[in-house]
Length: 64
Image (cartoon, rainbow, N blue to C red; front, side, top):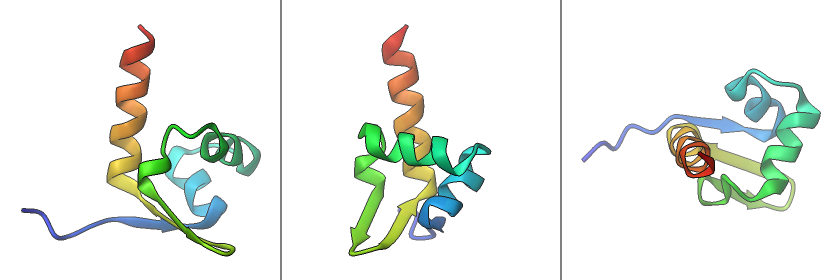
């Protein structure tokens, strides 16, 4: 069991993770694709980076 998790914080962190603009990162968050990787309390957003990548990979292959 891997207990070491990589987290990014906020929209800026998500944009850095996916190497995109903050507006695109906001669209990714709002799309619901990575909802399982996001934990949000108020304005504080914490994203499990590894899980977010995995969820995007699943979504991408499902489109094909």
